[in-house]
Amino acid sequence: MAGPETHGTSLTPSPATGMTSGRLDDTIAAIATPPGSGAIGIVRVAGPRAFEVAAAVFRPAGGRRVRDLPGGRVTFGRVVDPDGEGARAAPAFVDEGVLLTFRAPRSYTGQDAVELQVHGGPAVLRAVLDACLRRGARAAEPGEFTLRAVASGRLDLAQAEAVLAMVEARSDAARRQASVGLSGALSEAIDAAQRELTSAYAAVLASLDYPEEGVPEARVEAPVADARARLERLLATASAGRFAARGARMAIVGRPNAGKSSLLNALLGYPRAIVADAPGTTRDYLEAPLELGRVSVTAVDTAGLRATADAVEAHGVARARELAAAADVVLALVDGTRPLEPEDLDLVAALERERTVWVASKADRPRVWDEAELGVTVRPVSSATGRGLDALRRELEARLEGDAAGEEAWVTSERQADALREAVEALARVPGAPADLQGLDLETALRALARITGRGDVAEDALAEVFARFCVGK
Ligand code: GDP
Image (cartoon, rainbow, N blue to C red; front, side, top):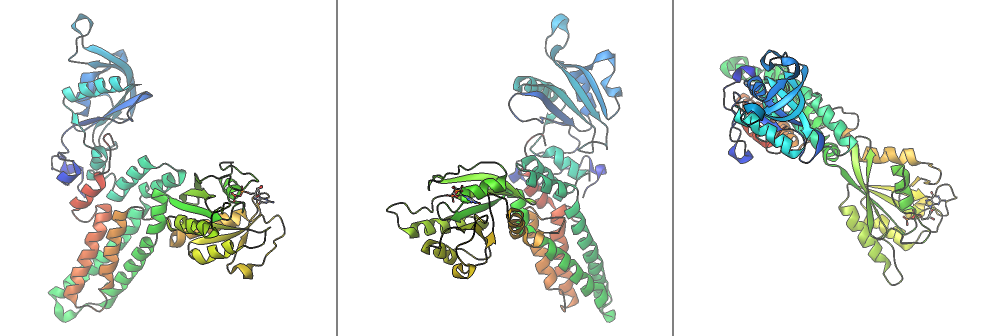
């Protein structure tokens, strides 16, 4: 990827992203805090003229000069509109606030940068931004600050995606996952594979130049097999990664009064669902956010399975099947204290084995039926005493995490998963192939990996794909 010395180069990923102007020597500005009113609002300015812009719009208290401020400094003062008409023909006073200064390369973008923290009203922020724009900054494109962080080598593309995931994280699980990405764990795994493949590629190229020497197997097939295994392990985390990034759905199914709402409450640790003795308390269905390991789950509790006076029992099963189809994992309850009914057996037949965890509920009381009668292995759980609850939680976590359990870095974006898949497929063709084809496949794999981190190859399309989703100010 380009280093800081590429200031002045044009980075123009794609017109499709809306990022038309990507010149790194422009100074860019944007409101970095969300729309609406808040205690504090921030206008961010980055680029070679950041301090010039700040000098025009900010007057430090105590008469210091903005241009002389070092990086890493917080300075109180007044924000002014240099073109506005204040009292006695002075620049118009806009707001009081603080100026945060960053000197290249020690800033988010790697460039000189300032942040103006003022009162968080939309009109105030607009006025501060306008003043900056009139004094030499231009309005930043979505994601442009982070794009610069990538361009300056402060972040790689996978980390930039993690920044986006961090901003979008709505659950603690998603946030933690994003922080792993930001730490560079995924990038390190990719880098390691890239190093192995690069040396294999070099060996193949050398053998093409000196065919009489042949391709030494130890220098190609062994590292390729190693890199492939590594990448396959990463790829196996993609499904859990998807759950971590976007959340998973868990359907809770079972006959009325089986204890679904009680179990949901027990898993949540607080009463979210209404529990009552009368069947049918859960009217249609109810959703609640639940954290299971590194995955955030939306639990869907349903009483739609209730066979009302004139509804046929099959209706409940059909509905359970429908809900289960839309779920990533199914928690199926059978009341341990009541005899099995045809509906329970129909559920067993209807639900997919791999995605379903079976629970015998109300395990604080004696169970009146046998597992063999039901035909599936059940976990005894009591919402009343908490018996079996931890084991159930672990089982659900294991189902959701699958092969990703125990791996530190998870693949969290489709973009990364696609690139990995392409690399793995190309590497699968390498063993035993003639050297020229090996060279082509290694090149394909290396290019695919470069798309993930943006390192090792010009990856303009990858840049465009990632930054198309950012907001202004990030
Ligand atoms: P749902 O209709 O499947 O959502 O079932 P509920 O959670 O509303 O529970 C139905 C009834 O079973 C209520 O009277 C609960 O108090 C009772 N119940 C639920 N879980 C347990 C449990 O673990 N032990 C005992 N003894 N009773 C339970």
